[in-house]
Length: 266
Image 1 (tube, rainbow, N blue to C red):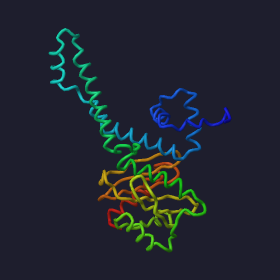
Image 2 (tube, one colour):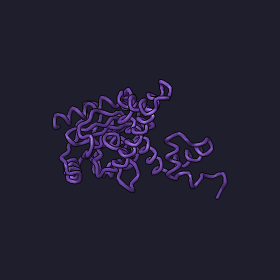
Image 3 (cartoon, helix red, strand yellow):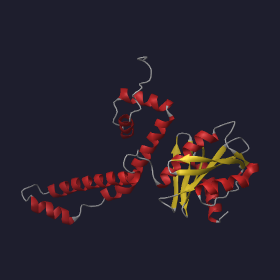
């Protein structure tokens, strides 16, 4: 093996976990960065770990900011009357943090199941899947879609049958985007429909739609992943995500229009 080449062990699970937690020493971090640059699956895994960590922070962070319950402080004071005056509150905070960590761990285990790698859940997962699908398909100059706009009815029947929910294709022509077509794509949470649009300058956006087992009615969540940005939300058990290359502010009006048409049942 070339000693100057990429480290073949840099993509281990422990390295990826440490990368997300920013616990790698500089030399090891450089090796993992090289690995992520050439291994799309490892890069997706890192994105999943980051999304899961963010979901846990959102779920349990507010609890950690709450005051320590008075009953817990009193119990600790009674158990150790000789301790300094501030000790009960400090100990109670430590116990509360431990409880939150345990709860977060069990929540993560429940979300992914035994023996499975952690993955994002809910709308956060949908946004990551949509971002990855955009990179894979919308950037393809030759074949961004499997069924073109002329087969719109066939595409809608195919996607609706596979995800077991009726879908429709939003009309974004007033916003300057014509419908190119779409395809069925695989996600961590089952099949999804991917619809591709293009403006007059060749810029493309995508809409991903799939059923939601969690967060079935959820407001818009902004997603920024490198040069890809967009929004994801859920309504009536279906998740939608609109992605494009550029700033989130440029994608927001398009996502709002898709949401408006979805709410009007197209």
